[in-house]
Image 1 (cartoon, rainbow, N blue to C red):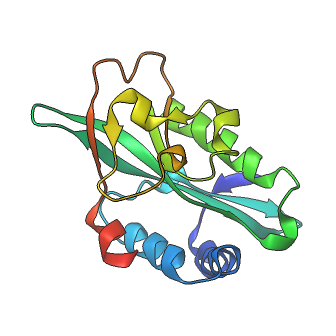
Image 2 (image 1 turned 180 degrees about the vertical axis):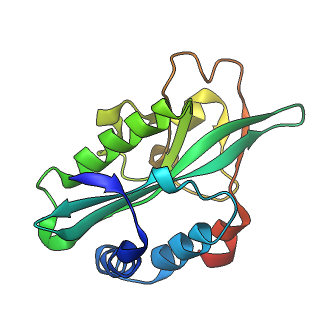
Length: 170
């Protein structure tokens, strides 16, 4: 079952991100974003199995900026599944459900910095080929974009601007 997080999930989300990523940065980022005015509760989703939170995905507003324009988009970050529940389709279900929710809410563009073997199955393509850039160094194959609405990136170019919480925590 996939649903929006609730207050009772906060500790479980912290623990699963710590286990999945073997550190605290992602948990700190989620907590910082949750406490910000840009947090969209409907886009912080958990996967439950047997009443236990086993996965989490978060989408956060970002902008694609150049000298002339700022285009709204969402960052998919982080997405985690407890190690003992990985490779069971939970991450795939979280991403698919999350993308559907993003589209329902009227969002058009998703950006992810993630596994290049994983995200293309959902339609993500190399963002560098779309005239997009990151504000930090990363291998080009891990920087990807998805148009939820075909043509949403037409004429869009620029650098991703993440909320300050990303640079303060990670």
